[in-house]
Image (cartoon, rainbow, N blue to C red; front, side, top):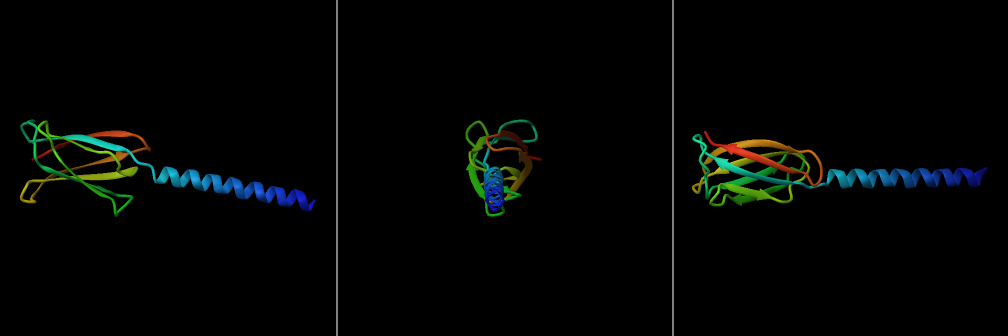
Length: 115
C-alpha cells in the first residue's frame, strides 16, 4: 500500500509541475503588433515615434518610428493589454490607442488615428 501511495504522490507532483510550466509559458507568451498612424484626414503620418507598453508586464516598453507609409511593427510584446502612444519629434504626445494580444503568436493590427 505504501508503494502505491508513493507512486500516486509522484504522479500528482509531476502533473502539477507540467501544469505550472504550461501556465508560465502561456503567461510569458509573446505576439506581434503592427499598425499605421494616420491623421484626422486619413493620410498616413511618417517619422513619428510610437511607444508600446504592456498592462500585464509593467517593465515592458518598446519604441519604433513610422516609415514612409506610416507603418510600425513590434515583434515581441507580451500577451495581454497594450497601449500605443504616438509622439512628434519634439516629444509631444499626439495620440494613443489600446489593443489586446489574446494569445502567443497572435498578430494584432492597430490603426492609431490622430485628432
